[in-house]
Length: 534
Image (tube, rainbow, N blue to C red; front, side, top):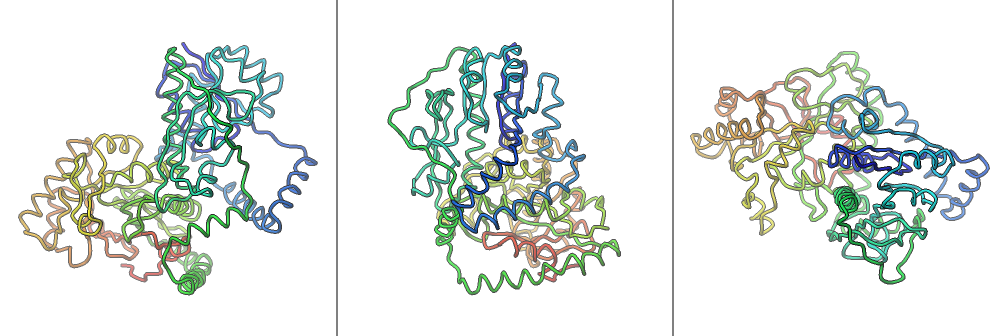
């Protein structure tokens, strides 16, 4: 049985997922996870704050206040719910520490003598550094086969941190991910595996990190297997390279403005809308929200997404980092539920804030590549309504071909099986994305039936929900709605906007979210700005 020791300085989603991926890939290993939670002496913390204040100026004060407020908000979250079975629960610290072959230990100083003695007693075959502090030889040389590090950057060109920022600052066309042996000099050990990823047109550092996290996790598993089976081949780093440090807040602002220049909108109109949305949202908690809580009739907002990527910006697409921030926001501010709970009526309406459900239509591959990791990270339930005749094929949607001139990639049935196992809902969106209100009724009915049977057969799902393609009011007829009921679908979703006061499970309203939605705009719509509630 192999023994692996993991060194880490933080247990964010990326690190937790990396640990679980290692466990899943090597079920027979013994794993020691050492998590350094170092609390610096007050004097040193004050010196560091002074150093950052000098580097960043008065911006640092506002930045720290924002961090403090966010910390206080996160601290109020109910940690006792960490073990529930929502999507992403497998990547929680609770689940990791509960594994029989995992020994999870928090340490104050990862280089303390007690930790050194513990690692030596464990006798690891390999060390793995995942977001760890800079390791010293007396620690990383203990494992029999040395220690490997996941570095989210191309070596030797981009040593140091943070991932993706300096590549975008330098206007590179690609970003790298590297697995290398840990050496005494930072990020200068021999390379085991490396991969480069193109930087899409509308990328942001945060969006690229989502991709790097997924790529890095797979590369780490590959590298562990190669080292432990004696198949690893390393190569020296060629060239002097550059070592980067954390950017200043001013540099972050400059890059953010440069990225925003790619957007085409009137600044006056943009800020005018932001003020309007802010005026609408802020009184909500104290007036409408408390009244709805008292009346036990809080409304439900069902969000409709189609694509999440940084290749394009149109009415069907949101950016990767944009989606990440949106999910973080709704997780912090609202009660997030599954669409299945909405359909079944298992939702407590005595909430002070609106209730939110997240859905996706069509079945684009970027849902699996970008949206799913973000949903898992924030532990948000979501539903994906797929066009079954296009899943796992090279065929695409006609509306894409007409507008873009080409088809976009779709998910596969293997992707959907994995998503179902994570706890996501998979529903029907017909076979070919047919317009149910405007095409031949017999053809529409055939597609509704066939899509239902395909999902039941391929995914072993009994209770299937239907979402209308197009989904505007004139795309929906009472005859087709009745046929959906007759077929045995448990619910039916539209796409013509509005929020839900009363739930008709065969007429659940949804409103679309696209790249034009700022966080304030999304908050305003969730809290009823559209004023189209039933």
